[in-house]
Length: 315
Image (cartoon, rainbow, N blue to C red):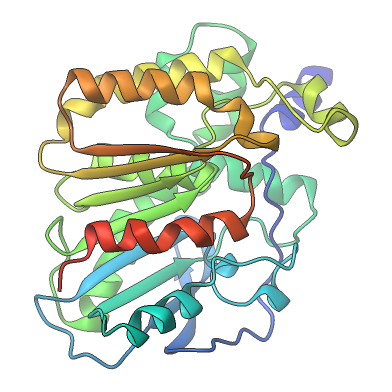
């Protein structure tokens, strides 16, 4: 029993996200859909369009993890947001009107402060394929025991349910030519997992403040006091091995990484440097940026999103 309790602490994530309430956007339009998934259960989607461009082969589709954090700070647990509507308003003012659909997928973390909701989010976003890269031991046992349960198969939900739904909804075929995937922290891990496993579906991935490091139980318990963590090396090694093994799937894809240097982001440098070396050695198309003085918050990801978007969008 003690091992199970410690394992629950290990897999708890850091972004605590509540149910969507009274979402408002300042630019563009959206609709919320309650998607009834047979894999991960009911999940709210936010479908956002910055303008009313006709859906065509030129339309780009962006799937975002943690969709409830994208637009309205008044509806989020920490009163922060990605400011996507403001970003597209700014772009409109300089004549950029992208033919674009954003699909925000609400995470499994519904409460914003719940221990088990945090755990569910972590397990949903963690790449199941990386578990086989772990050394035998307690950490691998915990991931296999809990993480491989059917209702944590987030990637199966994306490819087997969400994308077919979007194709029917918009009457268009989705593939690497017109679709990308984006996330931050564990959402970045999920985005990278998706493009590594399904390079035929996703042409690019945006990985903001990628959470490579997991967390040890004791670090989680003392996090309110120490304000930083070193993470779990078994998890780091497994993720790096997994990326190295799968990165050969990326040929003409584009991968964006970034990180800050403060609070949680300060722990990502070593792992990200190893990932960069893997990508460099294989001459992959990627960018890896460091932002001094920035931390693990939506206000920083919001600042970085515009340049990332302009990298991947060509009108």
